[in-house]
Length: 165
Image (cartoon, rainbow, N blue to C red; front, side):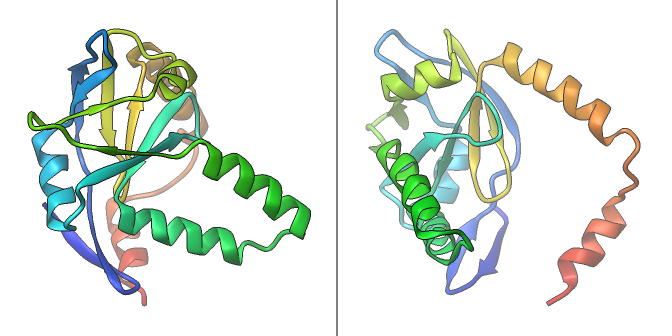
């Protein structure tokens, strides 16, 4: 598992795509590669919450959640806006332990939010993970491909940006 420094914590880098079944109790097996990355961070559970990018569930380590919470505290917004954002964000977070078989139990409210059925597309997004309904993700990707078609970017350009302090 690739790792890189971010502030005072080392965070796992989640990369890859997987399709896993969700059983009738809402349990899903987490890809071993992602479990190992979390174990390297000494995480005994995963943090889940609704995505702000679409109808998906986002998942991250407790370390990365700390980074998000710190960012929320520093957000440039009015006290009323920050309170509304915090209330919405914190009320939907679920901290879920892994069972002995490497599965997590997806909370019902998150399954309903993401419109998950029998299968989830589990996608690494760098420092976090997303769970998508495969059909909803396909439609979102088609729309995104249209949006980025005219944007010029390259791996070497990204690497150059990533190497800046």
